[in-house]
Amino acid sequence: MRDERAIRMRFVSGRGHYESVVQAVREAKVSVWIATANLKEMLVEDDLQMPGRRKSYRSVLATLDRLAARGVELRMLHAAMPSGPFRASFDDHPRLVTGGLEMRLCPRVHLKCVIVDGRTLYLGSANWTGAGLGAKGDRNRNFELGFVTEDEVLLDEVQGLYEHLWRGAECAGCGRRELCEAPLDGKA
Image (cartoon, rainbow, N blue to C red):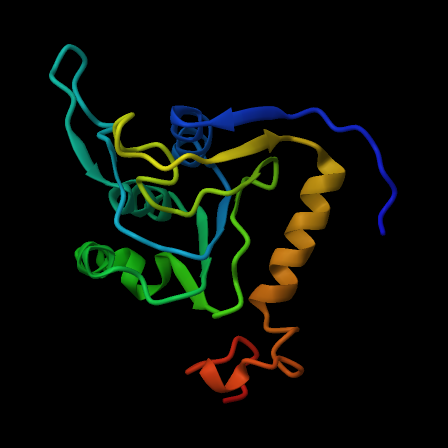
């Protein structure tokens, strides 16, 4: 058990996920690391929209593509095959397909976190989906909660765990290895 200590954080729920998490991702300068059990296409407000115009929406993958074009490191650790609409939209972004968005699948991933620039951390219940992150309307989004923090110690711990999973350090002793088509440790 780790030592207990107080941290500064902002509680988020409902649309707060969108306003905190998605906005932080849009403003990323260095890196975005995402862990999610469920991965679906997510439409977000168009961040290139002209002021005064009616709101328009586009795939969050367009936002990630713009980040990749600026050299932002993008990682997605997820538990199952992405939805068909996500895969179709992903295929429309050649820069992401050719490595701009690194994706790794592990059926044991159930954690939900978003780490932006190694400085902002979201931990909570929301998957990387529109219903989870508040991109859908009030009557269609999931009931989710979480928190956002810039606590350096917690960021270090979560980034360490993420990196540990990302490089497949748990694969050798995994009891579900037979379910993996491509274990993270590269040893099929």
